[in-house]
Structure formats: structure tokens, C-alpha cells
Length: 115
Length: 112
Image 1: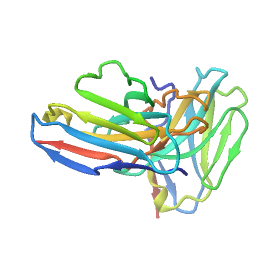
Image 2: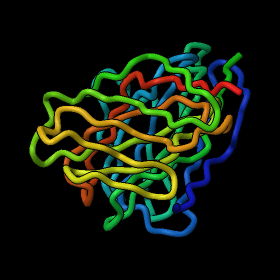
Image 3: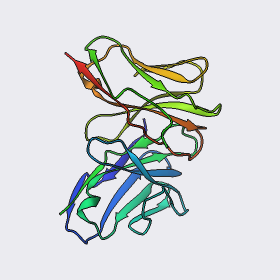
Image 4: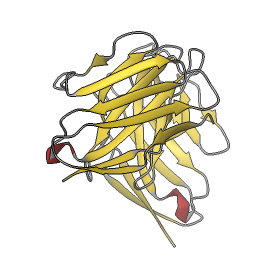
């Protein structure tokens, strides 16, 4: 299957700082990217959907000013967690899908710990 | 919102077939059934998807009932590396940007 690379794999940051997570599709053009958050022993929760060149669509209850999503190219999307707090500590996973593809491919995830 | 129901956990003996059920009684005519799995602390991995016909690939088989209200993912010869959480997802039209919503999934443990 297609390859989606997420960076970094893990990050520790201080409370109040911002963290940027990158998601790249390595061998296809990702017209749509999805960002998920997963807490321990829970399922993936969709945070937002972004189409290349458009503003992201956020799920209900997700603060768009706190979780900034940029999808400026067909191979890169970024999620910035602004003013991170300990409760933002979680496993963040991106997913990418091409225009003709029928399935979405997932990155390996980023474990964020806010201290 | 997830539109599927799966048992929370299952065990399977190594080498045996693992049959994972999924109920999607409210599925619409244009919704496909997708299966993904997630090994601990990794991103989900695509397994298979289908509309109404049974599907098979190198990883698994997907059996969809005639009324499409349920399906079964079959891993023909389970190995220890198949231990994971398996998610059944229904989603409209594959060639769109429509979202993938995950339910609670089934935690499959393959026992030696």
C-alpha cells in the first residue's frame, strides 16, 4: 500500500508551548488528509478533514484555533497544537487519501506528552 | 459517528481461522464496508473493503450478508502478528473525501 510518513514519532513539550506535527504522503498525491486523536485504550477520534488548498473541516467539539491544520500541498499536511496543556497529551494520527484511491493510508502516529 | 457494532474482544488459536463479525444494520445502499486493524501504538493498517460482493485479498476475506446488515472479516490462518484491534467502518463512496469514523473495534488476541 501507499506510504504515509508522520514526524515526529514522539515529542515532549512544556505546557504553554506549541507543537507542529507533519504528515507526508510519500508516493501519492493526497487530496484529502484526516487527523485523529487517540487516548489510551480508546478508539481513534476524528478531529478534522482537510482538502488540499482548502480550510480544514473540524469535527464538533474540536477547537479550530487550538488545533491548526494546514494542507498547502498535495503531499504535506501539518497539525499544530497551540498552547499545549497536559490534557492535550495523546496519540495523534494522520491519514491520507488520493483522489482516485478507495482507501485511506495512515501514518505511524505521533505521541505527544505535555509536561 | 460510527455506524457499526463489534464484539469488544475475541481470542483465536494460532493457525486457525479468525472470524470477526460486524453489525451495520443501518447501512445505506451507497455505503461500503471497510476493515482496518491497529497494532499497539501504531497507525491503522488497511485490510480490505467491499460493497456487496464477497472480497478476498492476500490478507483476508470479507463476507457481506445479502441484506448487507452485517459482515465478517476472515483471517484464514491467524498468526501471533495478527493480534491487534480490528475496526469495521462503513463509508459512502470510496472515490471521495468522505470521512472514516472509527468505532470501538474488536481486540483480537491470537493464542499460541
